[in-house]
Length: 257
Image (tube, rainbow, N blue to C red):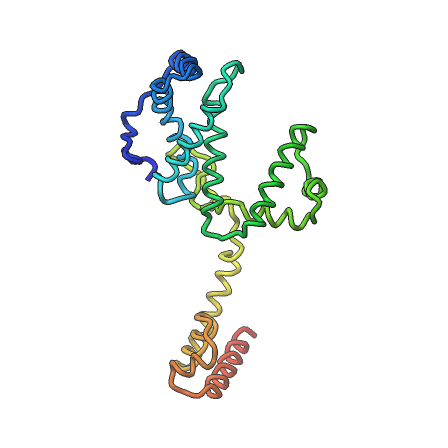
């Protein structure tokens, strides 16, 4: 989606790129109220927005929405940029664009979070930023909670609630040819060699059951259905299902012994 040629009616393949000298010249004109310079500057930095939203390619389906939100961040950065500071505009703008996109994603998260919890999380983030600037050290949850006058559990829950869901397919490292994804770094405690051996043994035990016992065990323990549901599907009473289930389990237990 994000790599398509056109986003929001803008041909991304033909976006202009400004040199540092051009940016500085336009910024001076903008400070003097030149609206054309302002529009030229924004158009000349749309590729910056495009490069930022690529970081969020797994967080949303609609690249158009992200691009528009990123442009809002770009404009905010332009309105607040101080020419007297010895810093490149892109260095200042990128965090602003990222922040705007993250706020949009949090507010439009499919996992609904109450407004009170979201407000607490935002206040906690502001306190965290303030303490970090003052002490040059990231505060603990206890410190943030004490500053806000709430329980540390409330702070922890609120911060967890606004975290963006992460795709297992998101790349954490790579050069586009040999990427490492999040799922590659998660250990699988389910599909171990020991588990495969158990599954083979269970399969052998199942072969020793009658056809009706196999159906009962399959529906009860693999499809997670109740005895009443199985009874209705198979066409027998719940009591019969219960007896067949117990008999089948005993057969399996004897096989394992």
